[in-house]
Image (cartoon, rainbow, N blue to C red; front, side, top):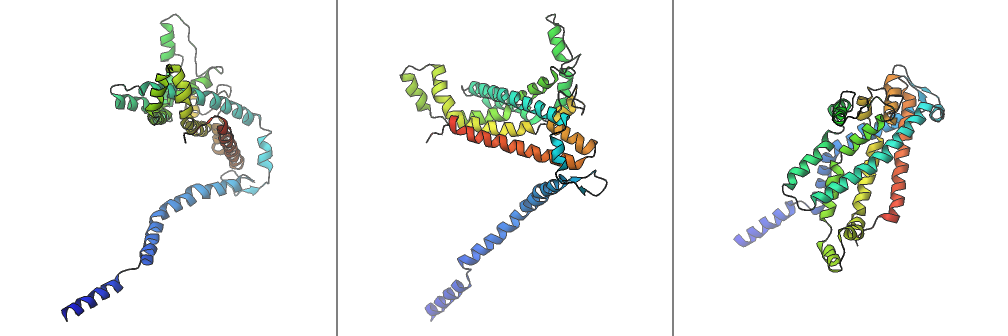
Length: 313
């Protein structure tokens, strides 16, 4: 009888155990609960403002009165605004100058750190620090002081008898001080390059050494080709980030984009139109033009990558 009783209890417990489908349904509900904050953020912080901006770009809206539908008028104005065209020229000059130089600096330092220096974690942390601070207001203010009339740069040049200038107040040099600031924030791409270098098999270099290849030949034939996916990844990220640069130009120029609009980044002009002139409809159209420009540049990079990016299969 005891055996029969135990069998009945076992069967009863088996019936009470939840099925696999029940467990799956429970897991799905739990996953939905945990994902709900992310979906709410996506809808309220990203998709919602994008839809609102798309609507406002077809209206005349000054932030104080209800928007009035104007159709394509704002988009027509984009191509008739000389300051907007100048801001595009300044921004493209900045992107095409700062990004390649930053990646070169990041790659050069990554190659140096990859040689097995003592205290590598310390050097890596110190060199990465500018990337954390480069977009801050404090560093932009410091940069303005360093390149000012009485700044450290002119004091250093004075030691050699060279007459300095107001680098940030001269239209010929103001933009390039911001380029130097962008290059200085090479830490993030440098860390990514360093990780990529560590993934290249050592046997390739050993085989090349047996064949008599030197340092330059190893770099050209092994390091550079195998590192092209990392270069491409950094290039895409840095181009997108450079087009969105704002804080540096705003602080260094005092929010004016000067001198003579030489540091008038596209994002700074967008800010002026939206929050200084209260022309939010036009600013929304500018924002969508920036989205289009970044999308086209990204597509161009992906298309061109077919001809120079090599994957080690």
